[in-house]
Length: 231
Image (tube, rainbow, N blue to C red):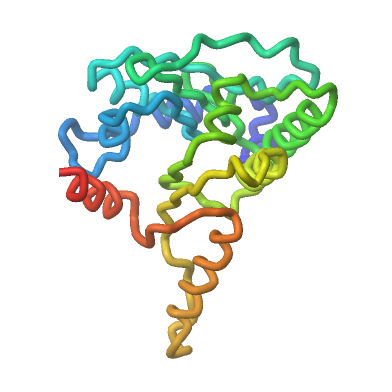
């Protein structure tokens, strides 16, 4: 995207075009038992965080009979005004918070390398400045006081690592919760007989340091297993 922006020379047009392309693609099939959006929408959760640009989660919540509210991180503003107060989310009226923007507001997309750098710098500067954090209170409380479930997310992503480490560092050890992450196996050199076992042990050890338990498999496999266990 950084290269494309250099060719197009207009980041606003680029983001508009990306949003049009994404919205022209297929949507989750109704009744698909492996769709994470529909599965999660059925649980009494109050806060959903997403780095996706789409509104699939919002639609799934509405299909489940709920009244979701969506909000977008003002990451592009280096000196944001007071973060607007959001209504306290409930299981019936949950909050869907877009960390990286939404296709309904193309300018909000965290898309290019420059966007990611601005995002990280502004989020860190804002949170380290005068004690106010750029994330709204319900999101902060969910990330610091609730067990988190990560689906379709790379825990190697720098955006995640900065946010998660920063929040984890400010949370007293006595309040830290256990989290779960759905992870694909890292690619390994098959010529080494025990490479897969070593990779698994490393992943478990690496994430356990963050208090994260792992489910090794795809998002679809996780959804099937969760549905089976929940009956």
